Length: 212
Ligand SMILES: [Zn+2]
Ligand SMILES: [Zn+2]
Image 1 (tube, rainbow, N blue to C red):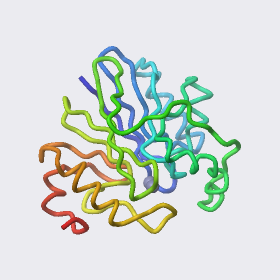
Image 2 (image 1 turned 90 degrees about the vertical axis):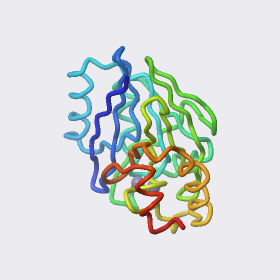
Image 3 (image 1 turned 120 degrees about the horizontal axis):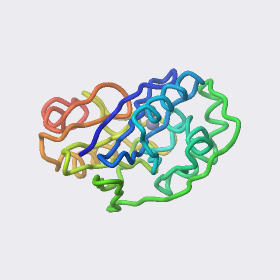
């Protein structure tokens, strides 16, 4: 069984998810924690639930989703897992940070790489990786079939999709990937997006104005 804790972190409002299994192993998706208070909030939850951090998954390496990687590395000694196509964003992260009004004191590197079709396991949970670029190179979604849910990062939101005007953005690629890789999931699947509230695949199939 999977327990999901959602935090909304930093001024851009990224959803950081802590997913924990019944054996208390957990993975963190998109560590957006930036301020000391946000880092403490995350740490207090992990300590309070007696969780052991075993993975740090990044849906894509845009700055708002990676601000807390160094904190997770320093505190839990767990490095980031990314798709290799996103590595350039990490290399350039200090520069991107300043553009968006953040300050990063060091460049972090990926510790592990994932690709389309890979399966991530912790405790009794397994999630498969689908590669869904179009918002940014290296964008992946994590699908847990057993729990009928998908973490979409900035690919798919409630009633919206990721912006495609940033470097490596491509509207057609993004909408094709949503149609061909996400909208093939059962309508009942819950969508946990990188920003904003949850939705479902079925709701988006019917109502998302960006996908015909
Ligand atoms: Zn993004
Ligand atoms: Zn984002």
